[in-house]
Length: 360
Image (cartoon, helix red, strand yellow):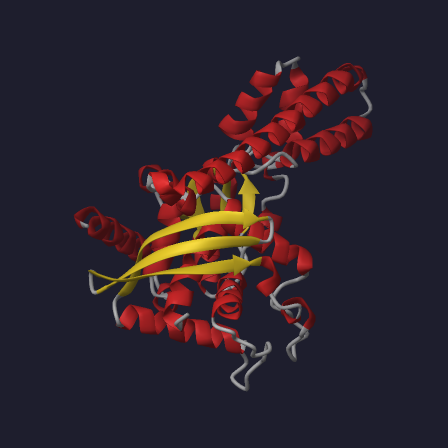
């Protein structure tokens, strides 16, 4: 497999996984490396260079530059899940707008080297925190119902086997999610009377904390993204920093609402999906500053404004319509140039980005 092709495939898989709260830019070049191990017999170990960067990150950036310079793009990617540890990919490429070639390759959990979480650079940093993060990465990149799911749903009838496996996984996830809602509703029904009969502040607060955590242990879906990211999180993410999900509705408030009156399972699900699970992306420090914002601020937007957290896009009507659009915007913008852009300059780039996509 050529390195430019490996990069383009890695980018697709990476963008499919970005809704995972653990996702960070390291995942991109980690996937890139795994593809080369599986398909190009790459045996080079993980290294830290004299330029203070991971060598595979440097190689990944070089492959990206080469793909962009030569006009290589992916026209179509389809994914077939073989088992829990392996997937097969069929990918067609174009060069300069003209169909170039089609390849088949594999994507494997076991192609992620142990040194990714065992080898430390001079700063005592690792690329992945643990084997568990590797598992999160791999599973998110093949199972998340995002960009690759759209490719699968519109693919030809020859992909029936792939569709059925994907659908089976989705059906299984839906069943597990339904059981969690039933369990949470049963718990709320058992605790609600005790909660309302208790006047002691610390006891009520403790129950709110426990049940609030239970609410946010429910699955976070791509559809819960409200279309916004803070400017600091956007610029940080472009540099390789982590971004975190900030739930607009705090956990304790969610618990208070659900304890206020008895609900059916369907009512609980509706409240969860309509507003309790809604989130945007911010930095970890911004997330810390927003804890318990409702104690001193009327709403989330007011708290952000008072704390100097800039939201992007800057208006409700301009918000990102999906993770897919946010991902494509991140892909299109120059990481270094973005660091110096003001909010208005970023908005202008967003408008130009959308105009360009409309013309295609």
